Image (tube, rainbow, N blue to C red):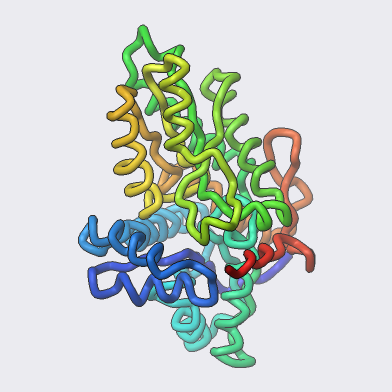
Amino acid sequence: MVQYDAFLLVSFGGPEGRDDVMPFLENVLRGRNVPRERMLEVAEHYYHFDGISPINAQNRARLAARKSEFDAAGVKLPLYWGNRNWHPLLPETLRQMRSDGVRRAVAVFTSAFSSYSGCRQYRENLQAAQEVVGGDAPRVDKVRAFFNHPGFIGAMVERVGAALAQIPDERRAAAQLIFTAHSIPTSMAANCKYEQQLREAARLTAEGVGRGEFRVAYQSRSGPPTQPWLEPDVNDELRASAAAGVRDVVVVPIGFVSDHMEVIYDLDDEAARTARELGLNLVRAATAGTHPRFVRMIRELVEERMAGCVERPALGVLGPCHDVCPADCCLPPARPPQR
């Protein structure tokens, strides 16, 4: 039995106005070999929405939903929230937690899958924030990756079912399911189980809506063109679907737990435009967000970690992820060659 003083939501963060965009992107890209032209291109994505990413508002809604869930279940933990790249930044949150007397917290990262950018980098950012705060900074333990937890898969099955219901009855059975996730460098993918976990989550979700066939595609790649990233791009997959005579596609951003910029721009804007040009009817499934089953899953994972449960629910063949990451888990990608 582990005694925790608080719950901590750890997320990516996003700008909440035009003046925030460039400082936010500089935080995101610090130390990374990303051309400035690419940063300016991404900035335009944010300016397209007046500099406001929906991720912070969604995290506030998620925290409110979790507070209601925790209260109803008798989980008496105060809830905190800290971001990697924008306010509330992790050092700010950890200082507040320390001031409030928190000594040990259980954390959830807003990422369902294992990778350097989806897990290890969050842990590194937490460690750096603890060093900034000092030796009396709260200890933070993360719950396991939840890509195959019944709560996540159950929520996504309902989201996909709702999307399929928007397609005319007579065409629904022929609709193509395309599951998407953020592309990562292939050298990063080689050091983790990201691709394997993503395909398993897609398979479980597809089976949940009675489908045996599906596609997995990627989106939102960045970095220099000399560095290989996971493919195919979702727009290329849409072109392949159209060439095969498909009329309807359901795009499922299973790699994201909320509708932030990579979803609303890369899918709702760019991919939707590609689909229109191809004559495809594209329906985008919602992310897990504040789906009640997903919210309940977070509470269950927290209780699981508090109790040190031997039984740890997981669907499919991969089994539950570890609670404590080993030293060689999700290592950073190799540096691309300089030219």
